Every structure is written in structure tokens, then in C-alpha cells.
Amino acid sequence: MEVFFANFLAGRSLPVLLGIMAVSLYALSRGADWLVQEAVMLSRRWGVPKLLIGATVVSLGTTLPEAAVSVFAAIEGKPDIALGNAVGSIICDTGLILGLATLLSPLPLKGEVVNRHGWLQLAAGVLLVVGCIPPADPAGIFTHGGKLPHTVGFLFLVLLVVYLWLSVRWVKGHGDAQDREDEDDALHEASGVVPLLKVVSAVALVVASSRILIPTVQETAMRMAVPESIIGATLVAFGTSLPELVTAVTAVIKGHGELAVGNVIGADILNVLFVAGASAAVTPHGLIAPPHFFKLLFPAMLLVLLLFRAGIHFSGDRLKRPYGAVLLCIYLAVTLVSYSGIVS
Image (cartoon, rainbow, N blue to C red; front, side):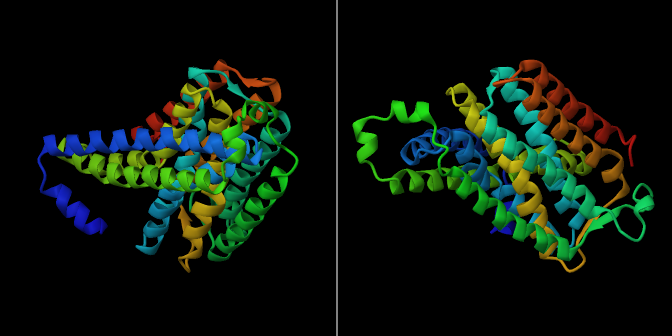
């Protein structure tokens, strides 16, 4: 299917490609708008905090593009791209998306929930770096790189199941009081199955739109003589993070910032356990982590995660705009350094 679509795009003119991009972006935005609306309805019906809905149901769905791209890259013998997509998506989610969302409006932080999941978010990032360090030669990571082994990939998938199970358990007894106050008689009578099916449909629309948009943008960029190396370094991680970006911005605009926070936290955790885990599990040789991962990408990933952790600790009940500005600047700096070739 992807080969057919790639051949289809190759035969289209530039105006047609721009038109496909416009339609894909519209479908993506509509799907995200629908997703936010139904996720909020689902959280009200179940008495579940919107942050937890964002960290589980929404983030699992919007992380599917990363998982699909990374798993197929690993199967096709491109394990460094698979790992780069997972790490780059975490930097993009926490640096670009969370930073931009915070600049739009200070994001609400539900103390116990965001604190607990925030620690898991940081722990997942640390676990990914540790998992890539070769036990036989830890000092050689800056010259020879490392690898996320096949067995560690299966361990991550086990931890994914544990994380989802714990999230469901933590849901009990943590209903959102304000949401319950806003419920009307029709909401009480409605079945929780219908909003859930709508959430699944909205996630499918968001994912499908992003899957059409990414190769279209790649083909358009090549038509405009943009080097393929730059396309791969930017559009893979950024393109697969489009569902999180659009969903987060839409959530903030509609006044549901906690859903955006939960989506980013959950997506970061899933990028490690689901995306990197599944990608390492499907290849017997594991995922290659070249030296520049340890010189730039891993430090950048841990930096944005630590900064967000600090923001949760020091910001009180809302993540302040200065934290968003710094997160966004880190993302831009990492992107510029990656393009410059200073770190190789």
C-alpha cells in the first residue's frame, strides 16, 4: 500500500501535492478536534481525570505513527532510524509541543497525577539511555556507540503492559470533581461505549491523516531540492509527532490543557516502551545507537525531560510560560546543531 502511494505521489505535479497536504492537514485538525471533544466526554462519563485519559487512551493512539514507522524501519534493516524516531519524538513532544502549548496558555498541572506520571516519563527516558549502553564497553559509547538489545525490547513491552495496567488501577478513586459537576442528565444516561468508539474513530482519522501527510511532505521537499538527509532527520520524528502536536494545541485552545499535558507525558513513556520496545523486539540484532546519540540526542532528551520535571516541581498548579520558552529553545537548538553537522 505504501509503495503504491509513493508511486502515486511521484507522478503528481507540485500543485497536486500541495493540495494533498492541505486536505491531510484539514483532516488532521478535524480529527484532533473530534478526539479532544470525545476524550473529554469520555473522562466525564467515567469520572476519570482528563490528564489520565490523555496519558493512556489518547497518547496510545497518537503514538501509533511513531510505532509504525519505527517497527517497519527496524524490519527493513534501518534500526538507527527506528531508534532515532523514538528519541527524536520525545524531544519533539516535550520540547516543541509542550513548549508551544505552554506559550499559548500556562498548562494546568494536577498535582498527584502529573507528578506520578511525570516521574515515570523521566524514568522511561533514563531507562532507554541505560538500555543502549553496552555493558562490555560503557566508556566507548562516544566513539563506537551502543545498541538497544533484542531482549531489552521485550522487557520494554512487558513494562508497557505493566504501565497500562497501573494506569487503569490508578484511575479508580481519582475522578475529576469539576468534570462531574459539569455533567448533565443526558451525560448520565449516555453509555460510555459510544464516546469510546468515537475516540477510537478520531484516533484512526488523526493517524491516517498523518500517514498520508508524511510521504506527501517528503515528496514535496524532494521536488524542491531539499537534501534527503535533512528530510530524514526532521520529517520522520516531527511528522510522526504531528498527531500529538495538533491534539495538544487543539486541547489548549479549547481550554483542556491538562489533556495536552497528559498526552505528551503518555506519548513520551510510550515512545520508549512501545515504539523503541517493539522496534527492538522485531529485530534479532537490536537497535543501533551511533555515537552522536550519546553526544547530542540522548543528552537533549534527558535535558527536556529534566526541565519539565523541574517545571512540575516549581510551577505549582500551572506550568509557566518561561518553561515553555526554554523547552522550545532547546528543541530549536538541537535541530540546528543536528543540521550543522557539528556533532557526528
